[in-house]
Image 1: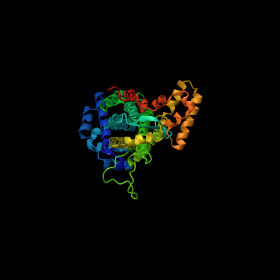
Image 2: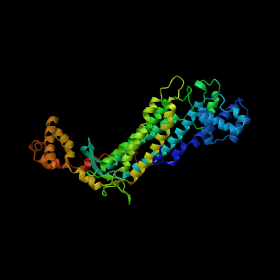
Image 3: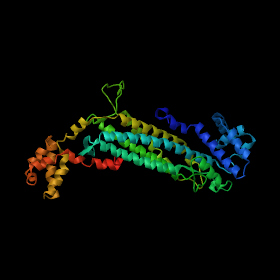
Image 4: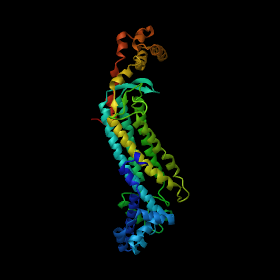
Length: 432
């Protein structure tokens, strides 16, 4: 991922230095277990820890000849360890190192993403509480529907990201497995105790059944969860983009002093962060289909998954980390315009009360079909001619035969639509 959309802590997980260090630790822990089993001398295991080191340039140089990254790595380690290096990698296969390392990297990446989600959830809750009763028009099909509150909008997005966090916790647990089972996964040349030892030292759990690789359905689920979280990011970003439209202007991204919106039009204040998040979400979701396709491999293993994972693992996690951080900052500084929300709410002359009138008429004795017909008739007239909906229904004898003026006016109470806000907030955030 390019530096523009990268943050250092996540990027560091995928640097060659970090990857080879994890490889070295896997090999060294395996040697410790082998030494305890009496398979190799304890002095050899000690030598790996004391003298085992590597140079990235040297590994690359060796790989250009061997065309095999793990062999190049082991050769470079042997150059430092000496004769005891012959006990490295005993009974292991390359995937034991590669897959276990990837599990460590994805687990560490998940930990950063979980911290990102916690930060976003905290900001969403604070802004939702701030605008708990900031009334605004709810829209379906982008058309005015019934009133809601801006706090409820944000609470809904909070709930989505809370679900995303729960899924990521589960995906992290599922991906954190270790395979040190040798060629085709039968443990023919290595004791299962070695796998258990390495797993414990690397904060993983032994893979119950590996072939020559860890099953890729685990990875598919992990990237699918990242894709869903990215979609939740885009869902909120698109909402902000719509609310910032000049026709609505109910909320907008913070526009800092000195910021410019257009090289041509000095008046422009564009939702560039939200638009950027929409694009970044596409990158994260682009990893999902290849991860799904990686589940299908030939027999006990092939390497068709390898090239895919070398790209999607860093790109998806780095991008999602950046996107979550950007969204947190966006929501933290989001500028909200309650007055414009109120203006837009009333722009259709009270049409948002049509359902309440419909229900009142049915409760007063009118059939639902007749009630729908007369309410729609008044609503369409008010909409076409930009008239007051209340005035229209007060003048309609089909309605006034069932409901008096005082009752009709009572149906336009805004508080009716917000009476259960506390209930919803308690469900989302828990009772205070």
